[in-house]
Length: 80
Image (cartoon, rainbow, N blue to C red):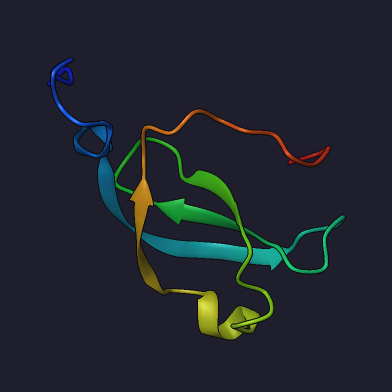
């Protein structure tokens, strides 16, 4: 459903439960992982996260998480 213009911005966010199906080190950043996250959509989402200092790859794989699904795409590094 479309967001009501009178709603606070926080109410316009769309959250989905996802599960990490693939994780790898970001090629250009020491603190980032790249992940493919299954959210029940046609294709998995590709997301970069700053969790590398906190979890190893094995600890990330298969983990369930919340995805904010309607944020604008932001390309912060070439190739991702």
